[in-house]
Amino acid sequence: MKLARAIHFDESDINVYYSPARTGEWCISGGFEFSNWTESDLVGKSRQAFSNGWLGIETFGRVTFVAVTRIERNEFQELIESLARHFVEVYGAPDVEAALPVAKDELNHMAEICGDHAPNTLLTVIRELETGGIRESFRAIESQSAGLEQFAIHGQMEDPHSG
Image (cartoon, rainbow, N blue to C red; front, side, top):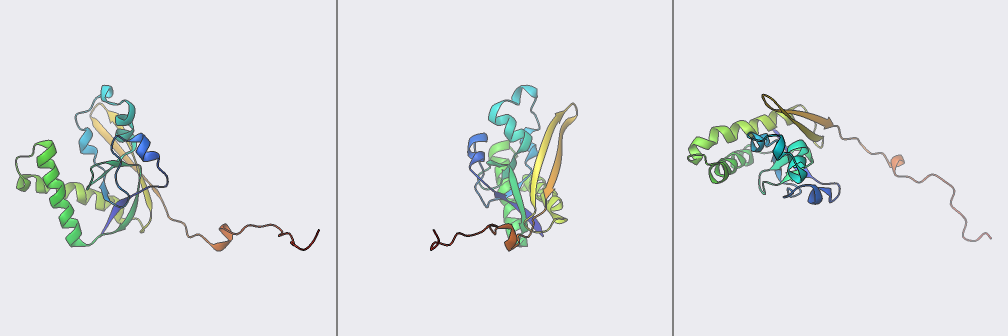
């Protein structure tokens, strides 16, 4: 089974999100957070979170890129339970038992997104607010194997003894 972890290439997420996800934490799309949003909510850092942010399941912060990786079944189950608790504490679900199926659906959806991709594939999300709700689309950036020639400096070295 595969899921995705937050990945950072620089510190830009610190500047564009109110609460950035921690590098390495498991992530889901998290579009549910915006289910009642309107155009007036789409300003500043909130707009960036809506437009391009994956949701970290530990910090509940946002991240721009996630990387596909394998997850163990027991860890996946722990994430379902953690997300269900979040639904109770933040979104007012009546109890964890009632929230478990919704949390499981969210994580299964992310596992489906990741399922056809090789480990280390990067994913991005793009959200748009439409009349009928939110439309999400996903982009995959396949990992490339880097050969030594990509890092070699081509040129002529100067002889320190000449001159």
